[in-house]
Length: 211
Ligand SMILES: NC(=O)c1ccc[n+]([C@@H]2O[C@H](COP(=O)([O-])OP(=O)(O)OC[C@H]3O[C@@H](n4cnc5c(N)ncnc54)[C@H](OP(=O)(O)O)[C@@H]3O)[C@@H](O)[C@H]2O)c1
Image (cartoon, rainbow, N blue to C red; front, top):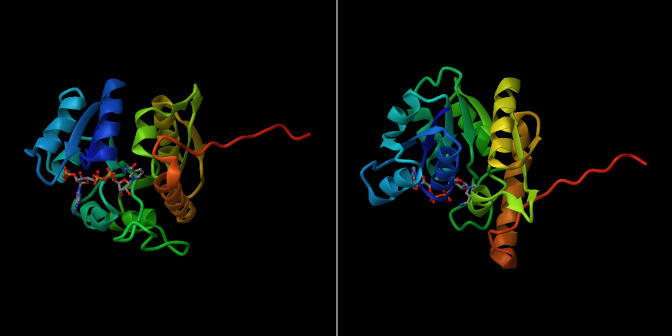
């Protein structure tokens, strides 16, 4: 697949490297494609291209939005017509001090991003795990769980497959409005990570047969 990754930070860089290693062609979008950071992310992703955000999405099969929440809606709106492309929203709507969320429960960042990019098929994913888990989802051989949600069934199926290819246990979380619960879950994860657990921990769903 030709994958546009918008943002060359922790999440964008990590996913770019992993998805390139799996045979995908990565095209990063960056505020400053010539920056040392953007160029380093590109080098780690099999010599990926780095361009402006709108150039990166122009030839992509899939878009991954890996920018801060504060920039996400404006960035999504600036992409123009995404013609039904799947857009994976990784963001968490963290407040300025990273101590809570800017919004929640009656709306989510994912729904705001969908409104900003109405022709995209937005799927929320990657927001409830750390970049360290994205780099390696296996914990003692057991795959970390990644929840995802979105309103388009086919888009959710595609993202579920991509997550499995990356090594996650992919759990379909239903419609995009369920991002209202995935985003607070990520905030709780951040609390744990910053209070002793660190980034090398992850959520796991367990299930047993009914007795
Ligand atoms: N870090 C994690 O473990 C983690 C886990 C799950 C979800 N998330 C979420 O994923 C998103 C990305 O997180 P991250 O840790 O990768 O962040 P980051 O390291 O700060 O990288 C974000 C990237 O977004 C791009 N960007 C575009 N507009 C920007 C702006 N106005 N200000 C700053 N950067 C801008 C930048 O790339 P260019 O400089 O190339 O433009 C920047 O490197 C966030 O919404 C975060 O909440 C993070």
